[in-house]
Image (cartoon, rainbow, N blue to C red; front, side, top):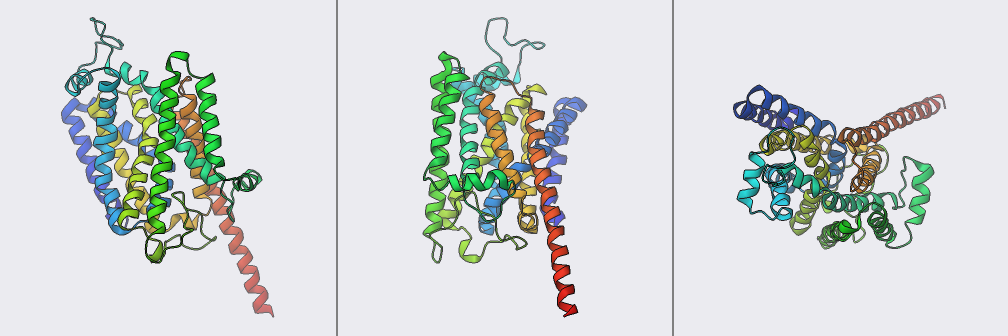
Amino acid sequence: MIVRIFGLSALVTLAALLVAYLYQGWTGLALCAILGILEVSLSFDNAVINATVLERMSRFWQRMFLTVGVIIAVFGMRLLFPLAIVWITGGLNPVEAFRLAMNPPAGDAEYFPDGTPSYETILLDAHPQIAAFGGMFLLLLFLNFVLSNREITWLSWIEKPLGRLGRLDQLSIVLAAVTLVVVGEYLVPDDGRATVLISGLLGMITYILVDGLSSLFESEQPGSDDHLPSAEATMAEAGSARRPSPVTVAVGKAGFFLFLYLEVLDASFSFDGVIGAFAITPDPIIIALGLGFIGAMFVRSITIYLVRQGTLGQYRYLEHGAHWAIGALAAILLLSVHIHINEVITGLVGVAFIGASLASSVGANRRDRRRNERRTQVGVAH
């Protein structure tokens, strides 16, 4: 199974490294490898969240995520998205934006001698709008999870009260809207406030629309339950395999909108990584090779592996840790509209939540085993 799931990713990685070497020699190969390693190591929370959605999709849509989804991730988010930002915000046409990307000014200069800003400078200037969109999308995802009243809780001291508060309808939207207003009022200069508020509002609208459509078409499937969970699937009973029954596997329109949901989710995760990659290299080709062909491909393979192995069922708190990591990432993105936060810190926060939830899951499984062994021993004694 491991070879079948990760084999293609390994081959693509070798091909990407070869292209990077032919493109920029050993320097290009090293930069490509660094970007790929960073993307994989800092995106495990993305893979866990993807898995919670992907396991509810049919094998066809899972294959679409691993094939068409990769094309979107590599060429759409890691190559075309930065170019689109530059040609839109910089008032350039696509050809000029690409030329600007491939011919940066000498040294670390932010402007060319004629006063034209560099590709990196234009993209960094657009970061507040990008961060507002992605931050609000991820914030709603996090809020809808922690405000759900669920049987299994990880950080019970806060998750249970939040679950009770979540009985208030549309509380997640209210909290997200208030957060956006606070960010716009206190973190954004007057001349950029309207743009950030509009971007954040678009992030909220995108989440509500895609999540709502996926839930709508799931509920319309023959034999489906009208009360199926939304795009943030709830945890199954402890110790049971988190594999959806045939009636809950999304196909057709439901599968399509879950696929669309996954792509927007992946985009929201990748916004900060694409911007942060410029701290390593401004070359869009190397960024696409490292973040896209290596990083995005392996993240998708990890997602498929988690689904095939039923890992989320074996480690009951892993999904909780991933959502708390998302909440932290959303907060970091929103803060970054004004404050620069190193991408390594962003990744380490996610790793900390994932690691803590994994350790808690292992401990809980051990306690369950010991409890079952004691029950068995008592039964034999009687």
